[in-house]
Image (cartoon, rainbow, N blue to C red; front, side, top):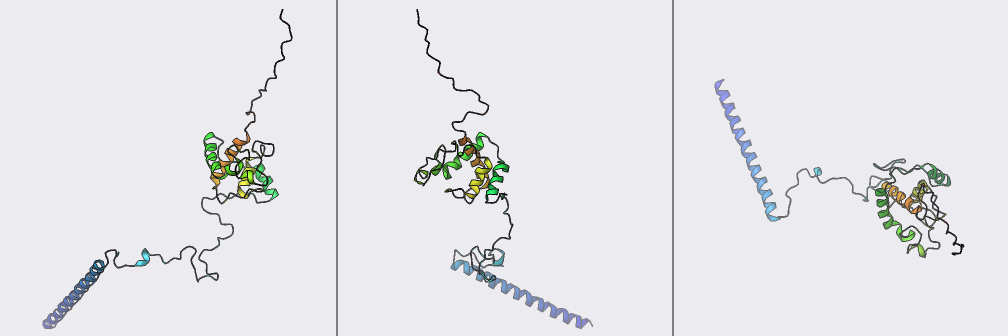
Length: 224
């Protein structure tokens, strides 16, 4: 019995040595291959190990995708989907929508000089070409239109509400196109505040009841 156990242990020892030598030789071969690859191509990043971890198999935007009948990777969002951080405009493009926006939409930003100044910077990028520097409709592009924009401080626009101004930026009006794809909601709100300051040009300040005094009549009393 002792002799059998000794023979078995002897065989196990030989097998362990063989496995060890095989693992060692495999490691040496692998290391030599890796090192040779690096020497042959100094710009190589080496052998890719589990490339799916960093080389994504997902489809790129605007690429062909045979999983769909139209072969398009980009899919139309589900109806009613609202992007993260986007504030939808609740009034539709219609006469009723304009009327409701004019009456109910209120600018969420405060009417402060700081907000108006930010709106002015936006105005000078997107609006000054047609509406002019002071909103008088005398911009260089506006002068070439069939009909230049009316002044913000004139009778046609001085009384339009903040909701109607925003509605016009959202959908456009007459010759003016929509600016919804160019301006964020926050930028449009700032622009509304600045347009409101242009509406007041030449108008008396709120609460100012001072009237221009009439010229005093000439003294008709003759001096003695």
